Length: 161
Image (cartoon, one colour):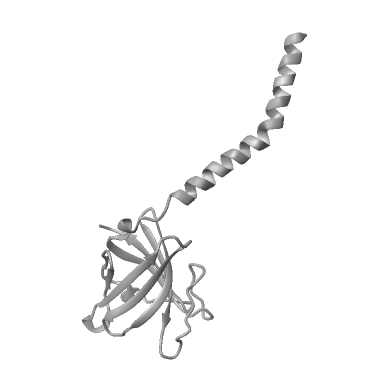
């Protein structure tokens, strides 16, 4: 009988502590997520387009051909009429999602853009809003989406090298 009482007491204590232990476990997992910061070096490489959306409309597949090369400070992407885009960029890796500021230096069009990106399992998601003469007040997208309203571009790319 004493062992049954001891067992019930042990189970009662374990049951009472269960929420506290779960909270400690959740805090540890949250801390791990915060510490798993974005490593910009992982972004460097060569990518292929998977899909693209411009202001809510699918980008034609023929416009998604050719490699996109990402270096430490530049992105080179195929452009129209054989003129590649050369884009300088800076990252804010403390932002969530990571913020990217882009400045097109060469190519069929020039300008700046504000965006966000995520690299996970060799898949790069990039959403950005161009800052044009008509729309100098472009806003950085908050989500990985492109709609008629936000006028953003959203691309998914796959890292191949």
